[in-house]
Image 1 (spheres, one colour):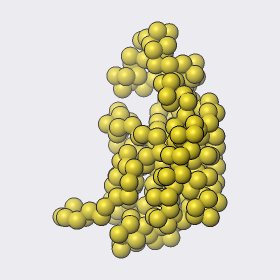
Image 2 (cartoon, rainbow, N blue to C red):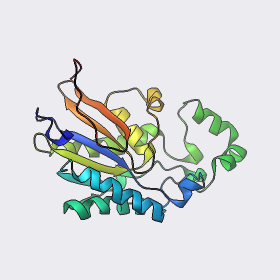
Image 3 (cartoon, rainbow, N blue to C red):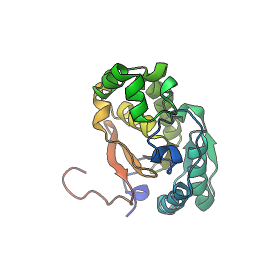
Length: 218
């Protein structure tokens, strides 16, 4: 049984991170820099698209950066669905941190980096706060989800940081708690399901199709 026909008519949101880039391998902050996928990243996207297509998505929306456009295009190719691109789904803008490795950031912005790691609100390199990323991305995802038919599936192709903040906002976590959501591997995804009390996190950092939940917490 797939999550697209779970039987109760609940809508689902699949938040899918882009495939691997060269800067991922080099541990460089990408932010809003437009970095393309590697050949491995393209292969990851093709493989994941084959799985996600079996969920019979109704709508695909994507960040407009190259790495997400390329990833989303693989799902569009196997489903025949159009992709709507929107800059509101871009990764967090990280200002002067962008293009630097974590080691370089620690050397140049040590106190700021340490504060960020402690979970404090930080404009990394003079960039966006995580709450500002959620302010632009989460409403867009909600509006797209509202247009789904009962039982419909929305696929959102975005970036690790943006996906984390969007999930945190949609499931009602306070911003200091968002870091409790672990990072997503390249081309993995998380699934939110609609319930009478709002959105629930059903799957996180998944690379295979979810199994139905059998038990008292359904």
